[in-house]
Amino acid sequence: MIVQFLIQCTVSFVATLAFSILFHAPKRQYVACGATGMAGWGVYWLSVQLGASVVLGSFFGALALALLTRILSVVCRCPSVVYITAGIFPLVPGAGIYYTVYYFIMGDNDACLAKGVETLKIAVVIALGILAVLSLPRGLFRRLEHRPG
Amino acid sequence: MTAGGMGASPAGDARPAAVLRLALCAGQTLLENGGEIFRVQDTMERIARAYGEEHFHAYVLTNGLFVSVDGGGQLGTTLRFLPQASTHMGRIMAVNELSREIAAGAVPLEEAFRRLDAIRAMPQKPALVRLLACAVGTAAFAYLFGGTPVDAGAAFCAGLALEPARIALERSEVGKFVANLLCAGLVALVSLLCAQALTALGVACSLDAIIIGGIIPLVPGIALTTGIRDAAGGDYLSGMIRAVDAVLVGAAIACGVGFVLTVSSWIPGVMV
Image 1 (cartoon, chains in turn orange, purple):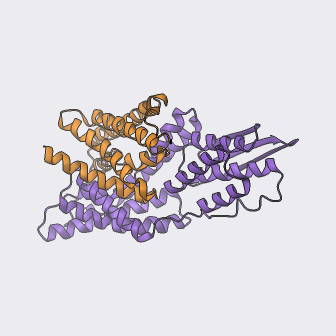
Image 2 (cartoon, each protein chain N blue to C red):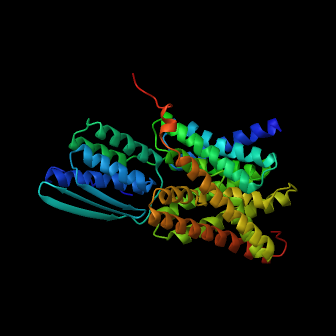
Image 3 (cartoon, each protein chain N blue to C red):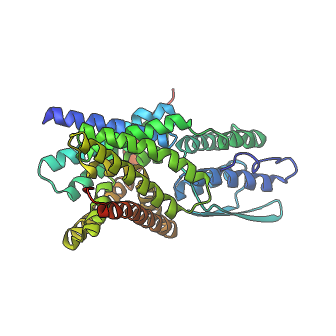
């Protein structure tokens, strides 16, 4: 399981880093962007392995992602959109959208509805997780600030 | 978006008008490249204050900017309509840095205009790099979402096909819905061809994982996250615009993939 976890982390790091290039992030931020995506996916994967539902796992993933984003944006003095934009992609329910359509076409209405509702739940839960962390007061992160001199 | 032009020739303006123009230009650059509403508003106000314009007001929407300044005995108002945005994080960071320096009082007005024009002209990554990044990204996501390394390889091909189509459609006049629909259809088509070829060669693969990896670059992740932040900051209208955007794009992807899968399921010998 540890090996599996490390593989998942590495692949999600690469995936997010590749996407930060698509969004024209500056070269110096590539690694940080990759790390945020990795944090989100790593926590999600672990939670699901430990028995959490996909929805709950997505929530924890979003919390981790947003937390690292806040920390990085203070440390690097950089707007948080830079990290969160690429970092969100491993959590976004692309698979949910796909399966909803797939069952729709196949005429399996029950499965379609179930997947559709789950997809919506994931989207809402990611939103809530990010929101919760982003509305934490600035002061909590002030200690990390890099002070010149 | 075209660079330069907007920030040009501040020399003829009175100072409040020049500051208004500068703040507007900075705000527009942020908004066009994917900045959140509160950041756009905050940046514009900070810039105006740094140049001594206390009576500066801004109202920002996802697709529009309204600013006014009251100074030197004159009231000036202007607005911009910004229908479509692409994402360029480098420009957002650069404007952020410039506004911080301006707020510290270290940048003369003319120099600020020059630097802003330079930021707006910042190049995008070369097409080849984007192509490779897209393919690597889709391959990695196909693996994450339950695919095997073989599936990841097929998704790599889908990513290679997707990015040129995305770049071409971005330049054309095609609307967002149709563009996403076509891109998703293309991904599904290439994935299907790869899956068929692999199956013919006797290699097991999962069409699901390949397609899911392939459509991830299209998925409205940015609209989702930025929309949340806008709504949370009290910019409900902008949040709604993003939410509608996310739903529409999601529906477009669904239609594109759905169309290709439906049609191909009619062809004898093709397993969907």
